[in-house]
Image (cartoon, rainbow over the protein chains, first blue to last red):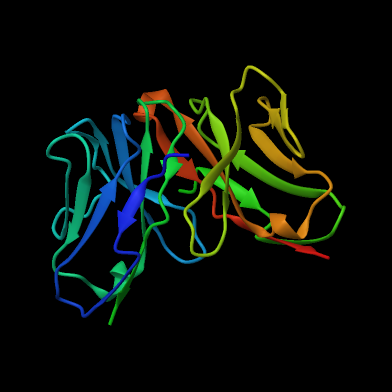
Length: 113
Length: 113
């Protein structure tokens, strides 16, 4: 079964540093999502793409977070500068189209020291 | 404001027993209700989902019961097995909000052998 690929699996960095996460959705999936999951909580949507266009970034802290999906395939989420409160699991999901079931990758576990 | 409330926070069941997890929602525009299963270190995996035009959906040992008037839905796991031990998340989605998934806080299920 096709999977959503994410890298790295783990990232440890110091506060004030820059960090980036990469996601490769299931082939042919037009919609891509980035979620943040704090330990013991459900995932919360940060940003949603339809092809290369942002559909919803209302929950993305735009002063430090940025996301792009330049060719409408893979995507990068960046944090600069990282803060202690950014420690969490960052999950990527994709769906064939808007409104179709979302399939998640295994995430990047970020720890800020 | 928490739009999807999930209970209990944790649940311990004996092998062969029935596990029941409940969710309630506020937004009547929600029209898709999936359940996700998440193992430690993994991303959430879609388990089963329902739309409000039916009151029950069954797939193998997993059943969703849906009460539209009460704005509640629940997951029943029949003949629970130790391999079912995981965190379960309910979620809700509305086409009017760009098909954004809103998750509950999760239920940690432990099935004892």
